[in-house]
Length: 496
Image 1 (cartoon, helix red, strand yellow):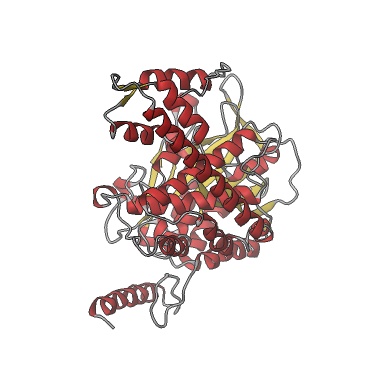
Image 2 (cartoon, one colour):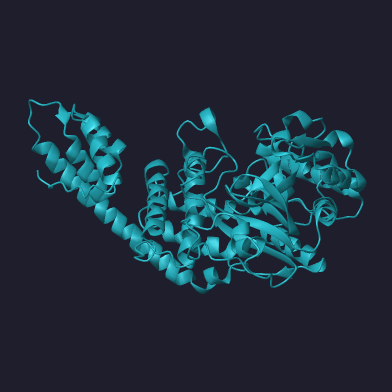
């Protein structure tokens, strides 16, 4: 074994021994390729969450579809509570007092538009993620929720307690809300040191469903990836090394239309934890993308590039050619596309046109990044589907049942995409040939036609125009785009 490989193994073994020594139970729940270590893969972590709460008399229920039910007024399900909104609003009786599940969540635009823009640029934003949740509908409340969360993280997953911090609602005089001293006392009783129990305001530690409706204080558990220091001052500051891993929401108020709060007669608990981030913590990875949720997809991507580029986990200026950004975007977006297709959101679904269009755009973005940045071969995107289904299909059986249909849909859509773009590039070349030699400005209306009809990016049109000494009339392009967005019924003749 090479010296570097041996050093890496020794480091992994050392981490295992440290965790074992801390807890003395002979278990090692870190993900490392070293002899004697128990590998904790993403599937095992998810299952351990289910098993733990089933042992606490929770009913395991399936995820809702990412397709929202009628009246939700959203394009996709993006939070765990949406499946249980009617129960929390007291419009429907709960089918069980305690529930546990993993909810498929898609965040593609709307209030989450910034999330999409950040996918690939950092270690934790995703367009699709799993929200692990445990729920109480008028049954247990704060004491049990806090105790079980701590028990699961510290005693089941063996996460070092000295790396954990908890936050609670510190009150808000404007809303007449006192500090949530009940939660603070619960954490003290569990054994969390007082200096690691931190108060925050409405922005960070008070949850609301919307302008009106159920709401309440929340208590969050944060993890310091560095450890061996006092990181209390970094909680809720956006520091990537001190991250929230679990949000315990205590729904005990209802906000009226006049903005006043009234106590609920029945109280609810909504505890949500993103699987991707939890896996990164348990597997001792700084990035969600370094876990076994993504590495197998990266392996497929690399093979499709003829081994040109290998994922190296770089960010920012160290990833000058955006190779690693592209890996993250392609893998993330293909997970979202696969989940959406499994739930019936096709690329050309007439009943869900807006949702279908967003999935279509997401797939295009993944395909173009894969081709232009990574050099992925054409007609290779569908090869990621089996790997994604392998990771998710056990929990979401609709994915396993539709694996071949999903792969076929991806293959057909990629073929359609490349045909459109090839036709568009030929059309663009024809427009360039017929462009008056005395003009150095390429009409915005022609750029608009190419972008709208052939799924080609404006930046590519500008780049091709610049190669011929032309600049695109962007003012005209954006005016036409705005008219289309406003639904003006704009029609432009495709002339050459």
